[in-house]
Length: 464
Ligand SMILES: [Zn+2]
Image 1 (tube, protein in one colour):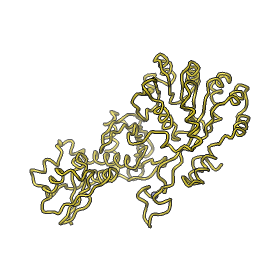
Image 2 (tube, rainbow, N blue to C red):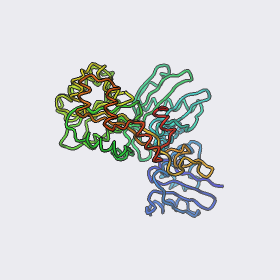
Image 3 (cartoon, rainbow, N blue to C red):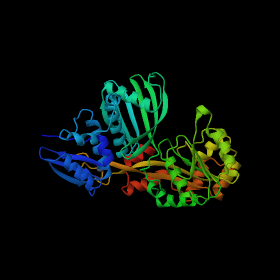
Image 4 (cartoon, rainbow, N blue to C red):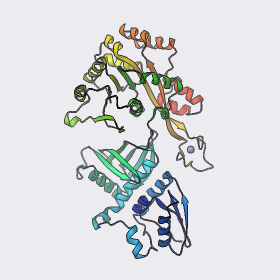
């Protein structure tokens, strides 16, 4: 039986793939089935075969593309094309590029599949028998494929070249940055390579994803928390903290907030490490420790930039804490993240960093503590999908994530408690009296609604 393949470059440029083929038929999948010129061209190239054309979506096209990239390593493409047509379908490649083509195709395939499957990170690690590629999807790592030791070192070399890193270096950690185009995506990738006893661990973080919606409504906050965030959006000065461990969605929430506040009437400066999303109109600044551009040194400079709103990616030290407080005292609205697990903890954390209680109570407007819980897949509802793995969620039972949170909006009573040096327990009691819903209660409500399940709650919040 005949198996036809088109060149990946042609497929990508013309948004067409071969879905099926045999000795008599070729079935094409295309984004735009109204493209008569393309259809005519394909029919001419495959004359003698019955050609059929089916409309497919972007996701399906990308999945097919990612497979073609891998197959094209070995596949002899377009066996039936006449010489005149063939040149148009093949991209012009030099001999050098041809010898590297397999690894380029493999890498394209990995990136494209990662984007299609909504991965946030790609992990490529050497193990005992070659390399393992895993995707972090909705916060959890899933095996994607394994590669031979030769393929692994080719991938490693290729990535180092793309990131302008030292190709010969395998003993020292290296960090870098790659911009890559695959399918219709432009990807901004942060790369970290660390030597392990097995070889190397390569982690690629996919940043600045234009395909991810960044509005507050899509994050999944409960009605009550959504209303509290509405209040936060109306502040004109003061300090607003977003807390939670790494991967709890702090920067996504902050970017969504800044995006909502983003108008030409306001100067918004955001200091980040790394810049995860780019929003036109916001002055994103990337910290750079090697150049001495740390959060505190950048924050000092930013004061002279006449900002209205400042975002501090992370308060890690006393200097940054002091500068953030000073900025909010002088009429700026300051958003910052802190690594604490509860909202109340962030008050004592800032006090421990040397912020006097009277100052903190004067500037602190709100604290959002949040986590992301995976949502139950609506296609299979977590049950097996007629014996096979559900294609929507790759059989994990979950698809997408929802934000659960506890939000303290600092009112007069809380302000007095902070000034009076009240303990965390004391503040907690006060909040409970005010009807404060903590993060576990918020998560439990979502379990009850069937949005997520108790396993997810325990995974992210512990068995409390
Ligand atoms: Zn499913």
